[in-house]
Every structure is written in C-alpha cells, then in structure tokens.
Image 1 (cartoon, rainbow over the protein chains, first blue to last red):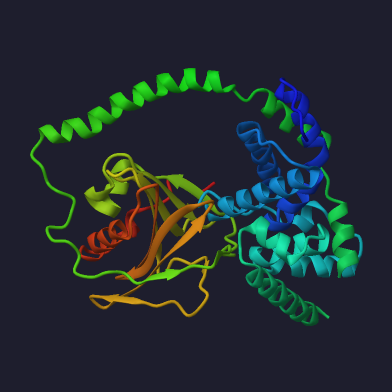
Image 2 (spheres, each protein chain N blue to C red; image 1 turned 60 degrees about the vertical axis):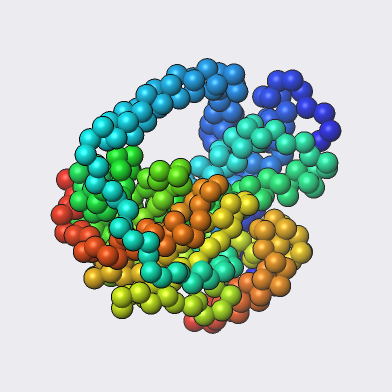
Length: 160
Length: 233
C-alpha cells in the first residue's frame, strides 16, 4: 500500500476486508477460543488506526498485522484478566472424527507451539520469517517447531 | 495433518456481525485531537488527584515504606527465552475487585493508594489467585500475583534457571524483553504463599526488583484467608 486516503474509514475497511479472516484464524489458533479471537481482532485493527503504518508491500502489511496479532495474543495471555471460555471445537465443530482428534491435540499444545504450527503450516511462512514475526531467534523457532511436531505425534498416538 | 488442519482453519471466518462490530469501533474511535481534548481534562484531574495522594502524606508524620537498610543480597537474573501460556482450566472461574483496605492488608503500605487488585475464584468460590497492580514512586508498573502454594511460571528458560537463596527462600528471577521493553520478575514461595512479581517501565532496574523482594520476604507472608467472594455467580 503506497497511498492512504485522508479518511481512515476508506483505507481501513480495505485492510479489514483483506485480512480479517486470516488474523481471526491466527488469533483463534493461539487463543483457542472464539470470544478471545474476536476481541483480539478488534484490538489489532484499532492498532492500525492508532499507528497508521505505511507498508512497503502487501506482504509487509500481512506480516505486520500477523505480528501485531501474535503480540496481542501474548499480551492477553499474560494478562490476569484473561479468562478461558468455551473451546474452539465447541464453536466450530470439526467435519470428521480425524479432524476433531487433530484439532483437539493441536489445542492441547502450549500456545508457543500453536503459533509456530499455525504460521508454518497454515500461513506457509518459513522458520526465518516466523522468527521475524515472533521476535525470536530462528534456531528457537526451529526447535519449537520440532518439539511441537513430536508432542503432537505423541498426543495423536495416545488418541489412536 | 496439514490438510485436516488447513481445512478446519478455512472454516473459521469473520461473520457479518463481527465485521460490522469492527468497523463500528474503528469509525467511532476518537481522533487524536478528540483524545487530546478529553485527556487534557483527565490529566488535569489526575494531576490534582496525584497532588492529593502524594502531597497530603508529606504533611503527615512519615513512616517510610522502604526497609531501613538496602537489601543484603542481589538476585540472579535468568535470561528468559520466550513466553508461553500457563494452561489451567478453572471451571466457573470468576473475579472480584479488591478494596484498597484488602490490598493494603495483603501488601502493606508499599502499594500506596493507587493499587488495583483482583481476586480470581473457582466456580466453588475457592480463591485461585490475587493480582495487584500499582505504580511505584519511580513510575514503574508493578504487578504482584499471589496464590496459595505456588504461582505457575509462564517463562521458558534456555537452561535450568539459577536460583537465588535468601533467608531459606529460593527465588527464581529474570528478565525478558517484549517490544523493546525490559521487564524484571521474581517468583518465590514465602510461608505457604506463592508470589510472582513483575516490574515494567522505562526506568525500571534490577535494584528496584531486589528492594521489592526484600520488602516482602522481611515481613510475614500475606494472609489470603480474608479474601472471600462476596457472591458466587
């Protein structure tokens, strides 16, 4: 995005429409429930309004928004006001038994694993890019991803 | 795994109601000028309140909240790799705001008068944890979490964390950085109460954390039995 209209509601709605689903899924994957994901999504777009960043490209815009989403999720999880509500699978039931087992197992992982799993598998980011988004070292991300896979495999085996 | 996960995630989307809610919030977010105008009044009131809070005690006989001597120990600060979430499901969890009297009864005079406290209870009304947040005189934001037994730590250490032993109390302390801001923390069990302290701010120092730890461990542990739910929802 190079030019921004003078009226924030014009360019903001474009950004919201372009990214709301992606960011909602990221927040849902990290927070593990619908209500928190909805709150996070609103906070992220309010950040855009507040910061009014100038993006060099759509990729830059996407990465910036995902980074803000991840940070907002972490902040929310650190906050003592954070309160768990119904699990994601209750709000969005799985289509098959296999899918339910998988999502249940992913949601049982700690949030730090869910972040890398989601960004790697769903968003298709490389470990280097995830390291930039999550402000961690790349070897840390690689190690998290490896541990997440191992943990997930053992959880799925337990369920099998 | 990939296919099932992606297909599930594709199914999650923002509905019209949520989209409208987002747009409504964005459109009704006050402009910077409006915020400044509103904040001018708030800041003026806050300044007056601060003058009362800090000014009046100066006119009264002073009882210093600081320990008479600087702490005779220094905390080992563990570098902290990342933040994770503590996963604890508490059925029927609810919270209740603490009164200033309750806050002072728990932490003493160190908190001053600007503390905000929340007690979290399980659905049966059992106290799970107490969280108190306040600003110190150096404008550092302090958050203190207390729980029966131990406060669950939500940090990842690159190696086994080093422990500082003070008067028979083992303290795990460290620092972590998020968005360029350094935070200091310390966790320990004093008596049967778990404490977790966090200090955040532009000027925050390890010495400030050490002083706070010292202030807490040189006194009797907090009596949390007095914190009871007013009503169970």
